[in-house]
Image (cartoon, rainbow over all chains, first blue to last red; front, side, top):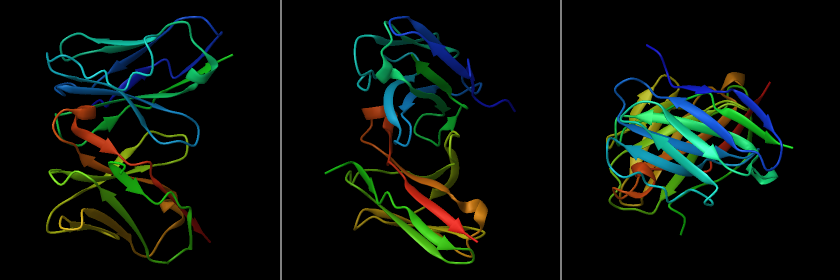
Length: 112
Length: 112
């Protein structure tokens, strides 16, 4: 079956611009996660959605970051007024809650 | 104490060697444990779940020690293709980070 997909695969943007990243989870997966991974670093948790519950936003680094998910489908991660330190790979994963996560290929964001 | 700790390595081993990684976790209430593998510039992929009784999948053996709160991964007869970063994943306390906590990974490099 189809895995987690993300778009775009690469995004180059100028400092100060807004970007929107998209994640399509595996159908039927109730949980969806966003992570950030800087070059050579570990996964940094950003936000977690579980069904219709309020999302866990505890990992969002600043108020420039926000994410939405409609029901148990697509999610978008928005970064406003991008900064160079936002450059990273943004990974999305989905799962049946509490079980193994399946990751998408990521969006590589470069802020110039 | 960090929630999930791993030796970052790198572990440099020759082909055919046996190598073992450990991972310690802080939450004694954790119930599920996984090992993920992440190749360079790729997304993490599930390698294996870790069961209380220990489990084996070909050349890979995972073990759990609840009393000491650590998980291990043993790789026998290492192949060049085993070169990757191995991530330890532990369930949290029911709310934080979607209930899954990732270690920062142990890097393995298998040399000819």
